[in-house]
Amino acid sequence: MALLVKGFAVYSLESGEAPGGPRSVVAGGDTGWDATGRDGARPSSERRFMERYTITIPEGLLEGFDASIEKKGYSNRSEAIRDLIRDSLVAEEWAEDNDEVAATVTLVYDHHIPELTEKLTDLQHHHGDLVVASTHIHLDNHNCLEVVILRGKCGRVRELAERMIAVRGVKHGKIAHTTEGKKIT
Image (cartoon, rainbow, N blue to C red):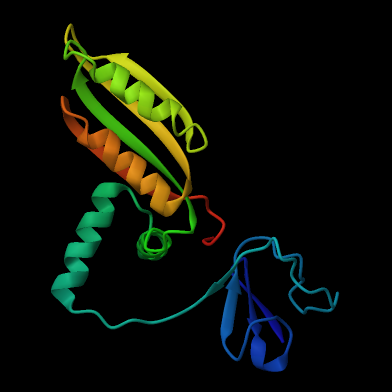
């Protein structure tokens, strides 16, 4: 059974019309199915299906969450919760040393410190299989900001990032963990 509700098709999985399991699934936008489902087509794997769920949350926590997502510009709670779930999944990828990951390392340092830039450049050259790109800008007469993009096995990426941040003379260093996107949608 397929129903069309305000531009969204709702499929009852119990009747076997869409893959997944015995739950309701919502597909947004143009699903390719008509209101009656008479074309008999299954949704393509490229279409995103959304599962509807309900959570119970204390009122104060919800008010704080709503205020936070409004400041960030989210149009609804669902997208904010999806991003929180994605962050959790990325954190899990970073827990496995052999998972393929990506990261940026941001460094601020005084380029007048002897041998500092040479040490950072040497680290990057010796790990050319992990370093995708880097950019360097001058913040003022003394301070530089460098951003290095890394990609590879989690354990090796983490080790290189930490070694760059630990080079004597780096005033501030930060690694931003991310994903190659293969495990999240």
